Amino acid sequence: MSHTHIVAIGATGGTISMASLDRGGPATPSLQGEDLAAPLHQWLPDVTVRSTSLFSVGSPQLRIADVLAVARFASNAVRDGAHGVVIIQGTDTLEETAYLLDLIWDRPEPLVVTGAMRASDDAGAEGMGNLVAAVRVALDERTRNMGVLVVLNDEAHLASLVRKVDANALSAFKSLSWGPVARVVEGDVTVVYRPVVRHPALPYPQASPPRIPIVTAGLDDDGELMRLALHARPRGIVISAMGSGHVPVPLADAAEEMVNAGIPVVFASRTGGGTTTQNTYGYPGSEVDLLNRGLIGAGWLDGRKSRLLLHTLVSAGADRESIAAEFSRRGRG
Image (cartoon, rainbow, N blue to C red):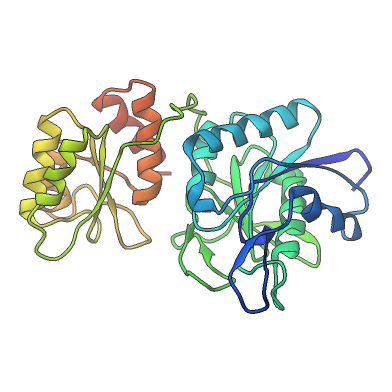
């Protein structure tokens, strides 16, 4: 790399920036973005690093407004000459914030989100390795026009596909259906595939909390919790359904009542991989039944990502037909 390569780093907190006040005690925020970025020159001597501390919070405390602020930071950084942008955050909500950023990121420059599973003072802390890998991915020409990427454990994943699948392991992030798009080995980025289509960016959603509950279908669900959600005046509902899109009939009945009340209802698979189907099963409560009742299938998107896409679409004033069309496009590839 030449000295012309510029990366902007925005830190929001998370485990990567935490340490324990007492050995063996719980970790709390202790490092700012500048602290995290300072050692990078050891491994990236030809990269100009511009680091900024945006927030210092655990990722469960991030809000939609914060994610929009991150998007504006990244856009401004590219406008000011950055060839790529890296966002540091906690891993608990990383898959969600990365996907929301992906929905609204309208630039070809790579936007990479990274973090760590272990605190900075842990004997096996991997945060610096993740950050170095994230910068390398963000500055690689082959990752341009791929949207937002998630980089941890020397793997790069599409934000639309990656999920946190383990609460503790270093290999916590996986794209179960397709795998990573790139790997970093000996400092080199190897890109193994690219998405066939990059969907157009959507307008920034409202900064208010998305009042869109996720209801997980379970054995013998009577649908009453779904009906209770109506009293909270939701802007939409996502059902994390069994298999490829199946629920008990009472839950399907309650969901149909929501649809008839003008509330968009999306169903995703709760399995962690695969897609909702459209014409595989036709029994009551199956995906065919749900589609006939006016529900919208999420395709490859899980419930958490479906909630954010639905919030973005509802914020833009999309009607049911437009919402169904967007889920068909973005949930199918």
